[in-house]
Length: 244
Image 1: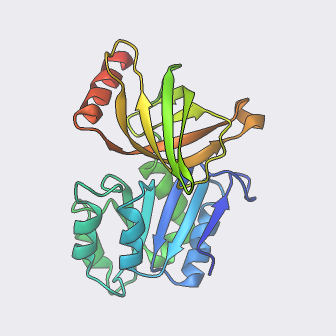
Image 2: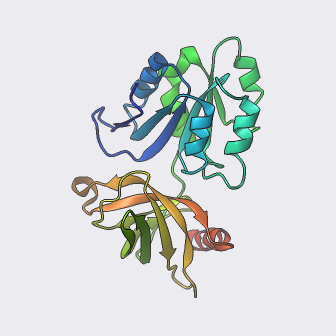
Image 3: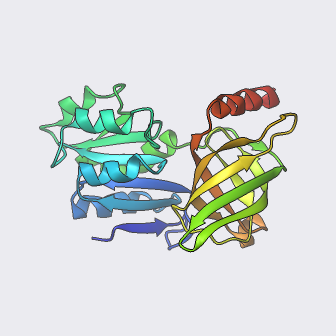
């Protein structure tokens, strides 16, 4: 089974806009999930069990996580406690449980306790795409042209570059750059907001590449993974003020 695949909005391989982690589903079911996503722009990554899923989900801020109930190596409550803890990069990620007839009632009882939706395994092909679209709808973005410094730790040392943002939301930003950072690259950032005396600092993860043919520039979409103390609140306050 492939560990990951890119599914573009025309059904062909292409640059994804959203990232999806699929945990512990069987190969035929994973194939159905991929089919349901062919109208979307998702990068889908598969892992075999809960521990492997947590290793990724706690470090990278996915747009959505799909996992089965039961998991082969841990309880659902243990998994949810780990993925939703404050230090987890996916603590606010949309989470869908896929369950069969025997486990469906147990799965449904977890909605609101770390689970956002429950999908019956026989309904995957019909409703999964719609459920994911609702759960991963992009947060409101503000067009913003300002300076961002991106820092990345490479095998031979650190690299730092100045870029210009294109738009900004509470979950991430689109940045002009000709640097070809792979999907999943962790970047440090310093973001200068108009009217603010000090830049916002934190870490982000590359989740998509801007397509020059469609967006007329080269760049990357990053999802915020963590902030320096107090900076997430500063960003939320600034966005709330400028949306008015």
